[in-house]
Amino acid sequence: MTTTFHVERESPLSPAEAWRRVTDWERHAAHVPLTTVVRDGDTGFTARTGIGPLSFADPMEIVRWEPPDAGGGPGRCRLEKRGAVVLGWAEIEVWPSDPGPGSRIVWREDLRVRGLPKAFGRPTAWAGRRVFGRALDALLAGEPR
Image 1 (cartoon, rainbow, N blue to C red):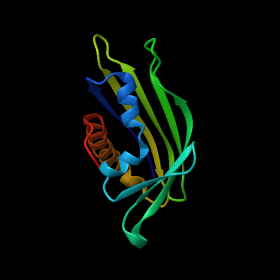
Image 2 (image 1 turned 90 degrees about the horizontal axis):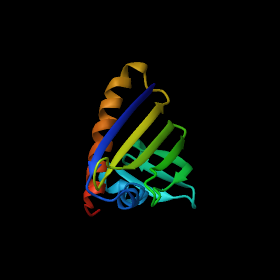
Image 3 (image 1 turned 45 degrees about the vertical axis):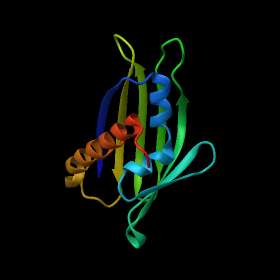
Image 4 (image 1 turned 60 degrees about the horizontal axis):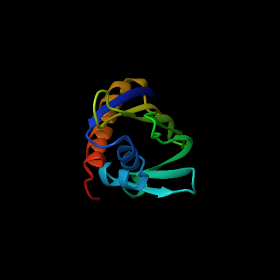
């Protein structure tokens, strides 16, 4: 099964602060149910979701890392999912708001889940928008773990 989805948010935070919050990988786990995150060096991390034997690893590699620049350029990050169960990519962009202060955050994801029938594509996209939308809201609000 393959599906794509995207989530957009506006924030009063500066692009630099929004970027810092949405790329704090360990904090994502606090806002994605049944998930823990462990860093794998400088360019990767693994999210583990589930309980006991009903869990799976979602290893990701950071293949693009361009923080927002002071001149108003957007920040861009791309993650490649390289797991046995979950494959695909996620892209995060943080743009300066136009007009005025603040930022616009865009999360795009292409998600492939091995063994899941194609019929689950639409419900998975809906769940992805909901889960990652709530996570973005919490991360941008600075909610504690």
